[in-house]
Length: 265
Image (cartoon, rainbow, N blue to C red; front, side, top):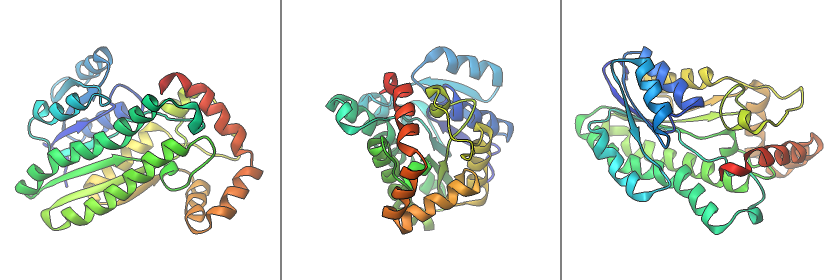
């Protein structure tokens, strides 16, 4: 699918990955509908992009706002479901309300938006749905049970939806970023990684989104080779992979990330 001329709804466009995706797709000729909770950064981004950019304020933890967002957006040719909460920390540290909020934003909202937008794409015989998951959606880690639950769920949802829409001309892509430097959830946590753990940039994720749309890729990883191999290994031998993670200090890294993200639950 060529994004030039397409109308693209991007959730979580307030900053980080969402902003980078908006810039990349706008540069490719798309009209970008920028969705997020905070009006000011959305309007600033829309002003910077100029023509073919519109701000749509919406809190995806509010089910009514999720329900009305597709109507407000109008015709949508591409959905990039990027908005997510970190949901880092041990499960017992979350209140029931915080658990519901993470499930609503990270998993329910993408499902409901896809449910609302996919039929129109299928009727037109063209469209694309992009879901921003995480390598945590392929391999669990300490302090990430809730976050991984949402990201594993997003992967399974996208795989099934891919098959449902295969003959309708609608593509489905899931993108799996690893640790992203300079912007986004991990960067804001202030946690430090061991030297042997590599990172990628928000621009790398934006390029992966464009690749997924243009080439109808089902899944795209955005991480150094070692992390990609590690997530694959975890899928094959989860017990052994968990033991290796412990030896490499995963508990200390996860604890630091959870402390840095505690105020964003």
